[in-house]
Image (cartoon, rainbow, N blue to C red; front, side, top):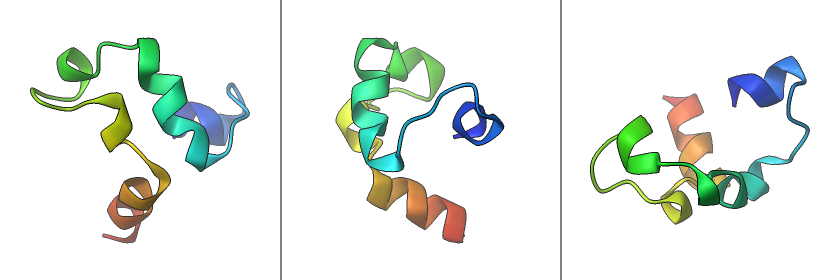
Length: 49
């Protein structure tokens, strides 16, 4: 989200699962986290909190 906000990546939030598809999500974020878990609904709830 930070890279997207700074303009380095230009993709809408609903494209986040595709962005993380080839990234090691479990290593970067935490055990059990998969790319499909990082969708626009989850990101919106995190930003609201």
